Image (tube, rainbow, N blue to C red; front, side, top):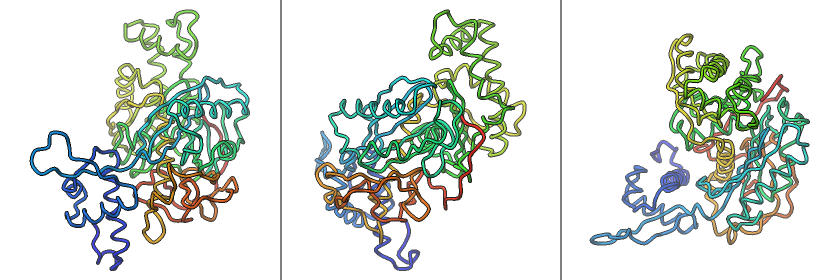
Length: 456
């Protein structure tokens, strides 16, 4: 923990850092006693008591009764009020649109999906996303105005302003201003990013890559993509195309999954959406035709993967997306191919997030945005929860932002907010100030974007 001397005597900043440390410990944890909080933060017990008391006064921490069965003098426990607000995550894919609702810890309470196809018109695809979120809200008894932030991910190259620069897999998707289209649906801030980057973010925060600083995420499914985690941050790159090795024709990633979908081992009449599952099952059983199809798929997957592994030298490669269910079939073959060409082969793991990885990552992006607004205030201030009104208050439409960027010169503000309710959590409160402790999408100073030559 930083000392006052290290902070140049700025005790206000020190108190703010101590408060953030306590919030970090209480988020996502069971109710903790003051002693437990002190041990996990490294603060003294008197300092912990002072900080927790302040957070209780601000409304972000709630005092709980003693644990059941406690012997002796009961110790009070404390929890972060994650249920004070809600966020939504949206995955706008080629073949489906998924949505999920979570609390301020990022804990998902409900999710749903709707089927689309590559030829679905743009307006219908946006409407499917809107209906998917509406289904989730209805399932948990919330209103649209109960959302404090929304994150959305989509296939293709997405620039910092939230516009799809290029997309080969969805009809007329190139050029869609997704920040504007999704931002018009919700009365709060909207964060837009590429789907593979959001999936990698989900793995880094809650999945098998938690705590890993350098990793390659493989988004394996009916379409194939990838993303990079560098130094603990999801790496975007100068023009937003970091990890897009699949756009290089030599990798054959655009057509790789066709070996699985068109395999003769798939029973007649099985839809493309379910074909790969049958191929994997047949390969497990030793069917030579299915095994050959899986081998050819792994040949293509390994080519792009090895290029990223030799460039980044990651600790971990994560197999994510729908095909992660077949990790027992794919990972041993992928490892053998990497061993043939890589100087050092990283650990390979299967994602536990499955097809929900993008929606979960979009939730992570939305939560990170709120962290900056609510806990990263100017002059080391944490916004009092009671300033937000009951249940977050009546919120005016917020700015549609892309990639968790602060509202500063050069960043995108897609909608003019109406008269603001004081403390509206989805609107920019302290422009240019963010909590750096928990910004998984922080990419430094924005630079110009360039249209790229391909996408999933």
